[in-house]
Image (spheres, rainbow, N blue to C red):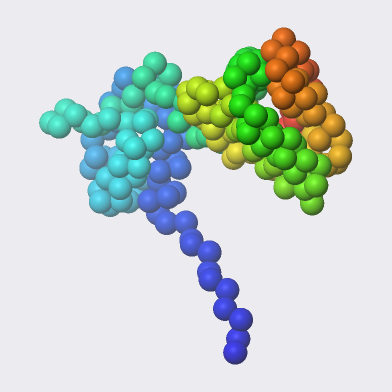
Amino acid sequence: MEDYVEALPRETIVDVLENRLREEILAGRHPAGSYLPPERALADGYGVTRTTLKHAFGRLMQAGLLETRHGVGTRVRDYLRLGGADLLPMLVRHSPDWIGEVFEVRRSIGALIAERAAARASERQRAELRTLLAAVGDAADADAVQLADVEVHRALARATGNRVYVLLTNTLFNAYMPVRAALRGPFGDARMARERLQPVVDAVTAGDEAGARRAAERYLTATERIMLKGLV
């Protein structure tokens, strides 16, 4: 019996048009608040059907970049004023400049989360952190180390008892997941990655709030510096 490998999906004309329009919006060719040309003119200009255009519009409306007003037209939303953090993965894919701003928030939020976790973590959560830290050191390769490291930070956020910190942590990781292959620098050596993160876990499990904040600031600053080198 022959081995069967499922074919990868091919990019459709809707995909291509969606990507083109998204890049044009984010690059400022269609400024926030402006109306796009009439559908018929826009479809003719791109050489597509109006049905294809409507499908692309639908995706961009879901992404928060467009809004349609019945009888008026389709307008570019002011995503910087009205958008949410769910736009970050798309913006990072569009321009690596966003990653520096993501990391700035990562530093400040991450340090605060470590401090809160030290104050509020239960004994079960402290045990979980130790287990997850060990998994970082046992991971097989850089990709696995990176993902194991992510789970430690998710556990730190849960240990704060504040679900908003959990969602913020998820948002920040989702933001740079599109480029994470270029951010594996700190995770190439599993033992070193564990040792780098261990002071944070030690301080949190000891209930040392100030120490946890300092350790997290050092960890996040050091790993950010290494990861940004991978983007140069």
